[in-house]
Length: 258
Image (tube, rainbow, N blue to C red; front, top):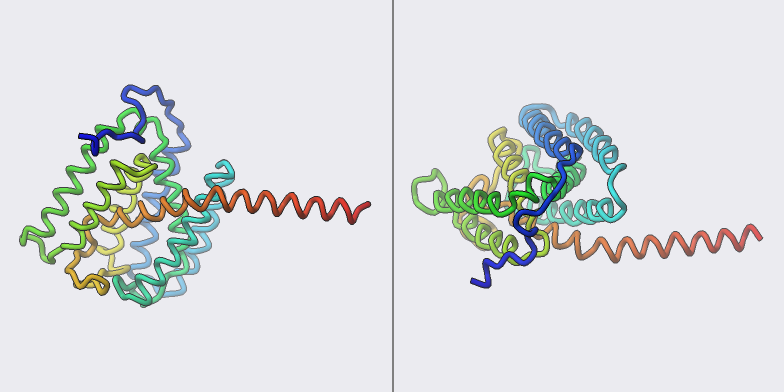
């Protein structure tokens, strides 16, 4: 039973305050991604740049009230996720956007999605009911994965089942289970909206493993667990580097002023 010990979950019955800002971030991102991805499903390509401008505007506005560490996490998450987009979509063709590019709004979109996962994970609702929400997520994602390999779905989704197993490992043993729970809701939603609108489509056969995958794969939230792991690992060193650099520049300026 040690696998299910939940070492990084908040204690049962923890007293956590409800911060309206966390819920606002989540609601805003769910609505904004729905409008953005639906619009990009039929609009001309130049609209992607309009959506990108709006995405960056709102992301920067929301980050103003976050601490430096969260801002740095978002920056690392955006950089890593965008590199992953070019590798997985442009190079590997694991999924392809409507115009066969990486839309201009994607970097800001990744920032908003990651910030939403963080906001949900730290919210009073998730902190107070962490185990109940985890049970719900495991059941829903498990049924989704089972559907994909049952033969009843339109497309077989072996990759989804694999990603579901990876997601479980992250959830029960990873350092940020609350963020992973939040990521499940927002990433599953945007994948369903994006693929339904025709904004992108996943390849029938995953080009890396040669295994069949759904559109979208059921355990797609596992990819954001990896993004979070990189963000956590990279945020502290990057923030320390930026702090040292700022200190060095201040010292140099003070010497010049003398």
